[in-house]
Image (cartoon, rainbow, N blue to C red; front, side):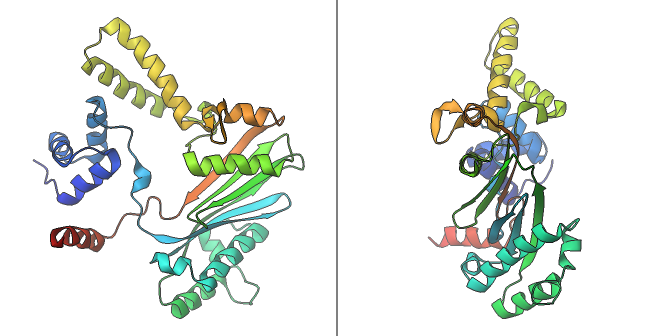
Length: 294
């Protein structure tokens, strides 16, 4: 039997919202495989889809920069949230966003070798910031996006840069509409622009889980197929931006709102600070100890 640790149980609970014993039982049943445990809990109707974005530890800021037909979105990490409020750090993040938009480096390694307005490499400037601020400052990721003359960029920062979004609308130069779509993306966190971007593998996996779920509810096989079809349609609508009820006016979808401007959504990028970075072990021990002391 796989060794099911308290850390694994906590991670599964964070991802699914189920109780401690249910999480532990599921992990034991699938011999400690977290992904399989999520599927098992969903098949039993006990858990919603995995909330992977909850596994957030790193701090820092995300930012955007728009210059004509070129825009960038960046994430720069610090060790504590306190540093995100530091003016030197905030200026550095803005400088990096502008630098990558202007220079369009191939990747982070190339970006670190760029020369900043101060005449240093970006890498040297990050080292200097780390020494002055007293915390490790690291440039994690970026994207550079280009658009046509008849398109619009929508740039939006949520919570001062905890989340940054960059959208492109084709067929309109209405920046305000593009920004409204970016605001929606920040709030709702879609995974795709439309269903054509969902891989067949993901659809097959979801269909298998939904089928198992319906069978476990004791529904007759002939009804199951229709139920799964309906639920799969709902699943697609939940994760695709254009099919979601528009956050500013839920009576219309995002696609309908954008169409009213004579446009379509070409792309979006959403950076949430720290998403996907695993929490350090010592944080977890500390959390447990704090609970014990209460």
